[in-house]
Amino acid sequence: MAPTPTPPPDPGGTPQEAPDAPGIRAFLTFVLLAAGAIWETVDGSLRPGWLSWTGLAAMSALYTLTVVMAFRRRAVPARLALAGLAAVVFGWAIVLGHGWYYLFPLLGVACGVTLRGRAVRVATAALPLGTALVVWAGGGTLESILAFSWGTLSAGLVVAVILHLHMVIGELNQTRQRLAEAAVAEERLRFSRDLHDLLGHTLSVIVVKAEAVRRLARRDPGQAERQAADIEAVGRQALTEVREAVTGYRAGGLADELSRARDALAAAGVRARIRRTGPPPAARAETLLGWVVREGVTNIIRHSGATEAEIDLTGLTLTIRDNGSDGPHPTESGTGGAGESGSGLRGLAERLGQAGGSVEAGPHPGGGFQLTATLPPGV
Image (cartoon, rainbow, N blue to C red; front, side, top):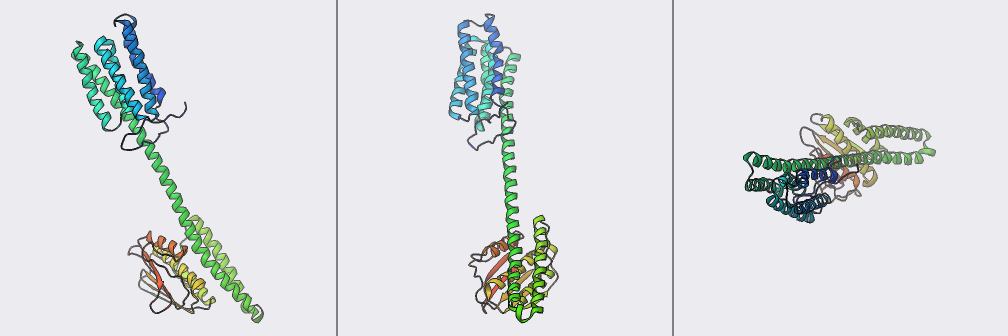
């Protein structure tokens, strides 16, 4: 069977399509509830016969139109057809009697297909009452009154509940798909930040050391060879870190990061002072602060023109200062803010912001540039 749409939305929202929702064909088969009226028309119990056949034809056309319009999400034509169907069923039941009572459940089904929200609750409450009055007025017994009223009520409620559940299932499926897409987007963002931080720092170190090799190649071949060996070591380390970042399990040791920062700054001609006080951070905090060291040192090497730098780690607060004059100058600070400092500091602020931390970056009052990262206790 071809995929079928769900019924029209209620005024409060738009239902989503569930893959196995019942469709038009399934509900058109409920026309078979008219079998009792057809049989009594054929055997002559319902007179005049031409009036019964006319009513059956009108009922079939209006019910089909109601279902088709409802499933095509054309609410106004569907409700007009439903009103016409109700008029035919009630009118012919009052005039012709017993055989037409079997069509009240069919009217309940049509209400369940077409109406949503408060409208379906009002209809499924009023319709059994109207059914009971018509059957009572036609001389029906208490048993028949209860039977037809209950059949009408249950038909409308069951259909409305089933279709509502399919709408909810469709909305849940769509929500799950959106959550999966959001998770993919978040992973892409994480991966892009990791690659930026990894490769930006590593390539900066390689460029600095390559310049040193070029300067020393003729004057001091031995020193140039050592610098070239450092380039090879840095490249191999970068390959390892990229592989670890791809798998999402990179755990940067802060001590190793500080050691690499000292070597990189020395190679760039920057004298570094590194101080650590307070208890050692936890594993996750070490990883986050390691990213701060990497980004801060990369910015010093690339942009600052500094000759001195200071890295101070006190508990969960890391401060990186330099005496340069050409560093980046963010216009914003705080969690998630790095202003116009470039994608590196923005990514760093986002990374720490997810852990409840903050990043502040800007000119230092005593000259140069300062980057401060703070993590909350318990990270």
